[in-house]
Length: 305
Image (cartoon, rainbow, N blue to C red):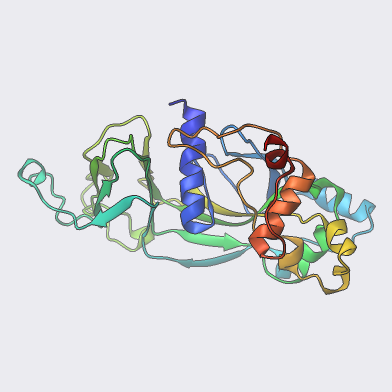
């Protein structure tokens, strides 16, 4: 299974579970306000800029869009540090961690995070664990309602929230019906994230698998340097709304709805059933179906039949 197919499959499974987008490579920074396109092959965000950059502000000024994004009321908001988040896709059952004889000497009983997962035989499953994540997000209200008119954002996706953390674990199963255990040792977690450090002992993830589609890391200093999860909006094709006589009643959610994945349903190995370039008409039809306003019809699908 190529890494790009694994990336897209993992992202697709997490998207179905949470309506949020997984970052297959969490050390790569994704920031609130980033905009760009989705690589249809890998599912990853290809960043083209950020609405909080000086160049974007200058462009807004030139386009006559009167908003100062340096105003504190428009700056990203940081939420509180949350408890550990564990996400499982369909076909994955989370169970209690059991201390088997072969791991009883690894000091896992006091681990701050520990869990076991049973994956369904013959199907891919995804698990994403974030240790003490913190959300950051664009303030709701006027901001996105103004910047949606910017030329740079036409047909673009925008990151409206991110989840960062000092430690993450992500795993895509190999269809063998495996049982996977994981733990994060707690004897030396840094005080910065609420646990007293101890004695210089190393802190890291323990797991009973060594697979190609396993990724994990923990920052020993407790820095929030990983972005495993984020939310995306895509600018609605506003003239379609205007055509339906709704332009005077559009909310921010109308202008920037949650976006479906830009690929056909995937098989267990991350391949599309039929590969095609989605037109604006197809995207509008799919988005309308998500909103429940129109039935989902695809021009490509109708041509194929």
